Image 1 (cartoon, rainbow, N blue to C red):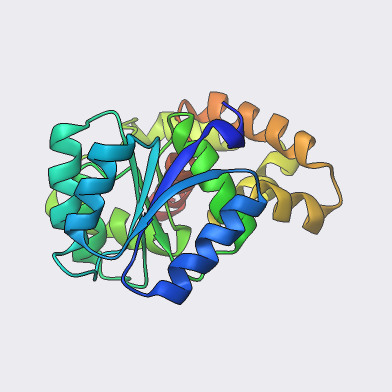
Image 2 (cartoon, rainbow, N blue to C red):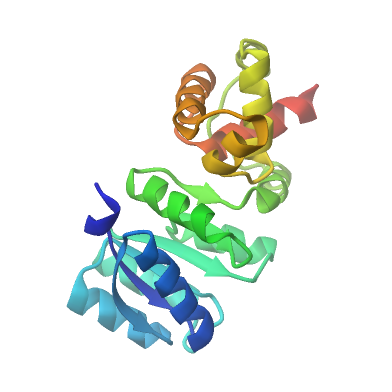
Length: 223
């Protein structure tokens, strides 16, 4: 799916921020079909416009989590990405358990947000790496299973099967770098980074870069 064919709504009660996001996404070729400032707006826009992606703030009037639940109950195929300043473990976990496909902090760069949206539309889930380790700790403490569930020996084998270059790339990705930022930092083309990431995901038997980062942190915690 091309960026132009990805239809997005943005719901945030800070108009300057909302408009800035809309301009940034439009400049990258996405189609922003609607904007709102409340949970009621979010529900209405989804019902009326049938977007592919909804970017929701948590602190809007009516509550972003409430909007998330209502929207996904009626439109389970919609990709919902929470875009917020909240780094609360409770907010992150509740959003993910409620069906959010992504949880992104508002400090994200425009290029990073665009890449996240494309990955989410492609079927991936995303959590800002700065929050991923805390989520892992919370899940471990509660006895929950961290996906993907693999024996420690298998995790170690998968981790050690990576090349030094793949190790370097995954470490940068787990620190929150986009493919473009990784390419710039280590002097490779972005398409080369994508090729390496495909190899990494296959070796680790995970679905996306967030799960790969979590698995790396899990392996290091176990070692």
